[in-house]
Amino acid sequence: MDQERTSQEITSLVGREVYSNNGVFVGEVDDIKLDLGTEIVTGLALRDPNEELFGADVRGTRGVLIPYRWVRAVGDVVLVNDVVERLETPEEEGEEVVA
Image 1 (cartoon, rainbow, N blue to C red):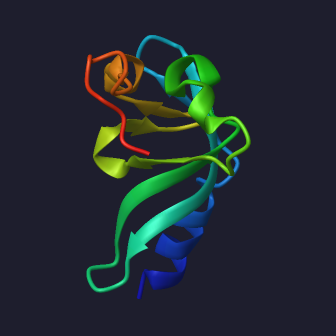
Image 2 (cartoon, helix red, strand yellow):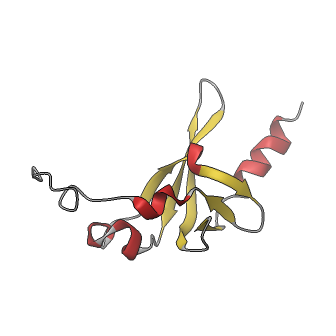
């Protein structure tokens, strides 16, 4: 029925820029994480993530995966909750980092 239309809508997310509610650039959608059993989008794989948000740990990586539940709106760009701006690394929280 609408499976073809739905798949086109999902793939249209690829390439869109992702911003927080506050207008901070987060990254660009590179791929979609999909639960095949339920056919529900569960995450967005972002390329070129904002190093100021995610720290130097993302340097040299292919990107980051954010939960789809953080998505607030999809239009010309994807808007996500500002929770992404409040991410802290274990060092910032005072926890020991285990390598």
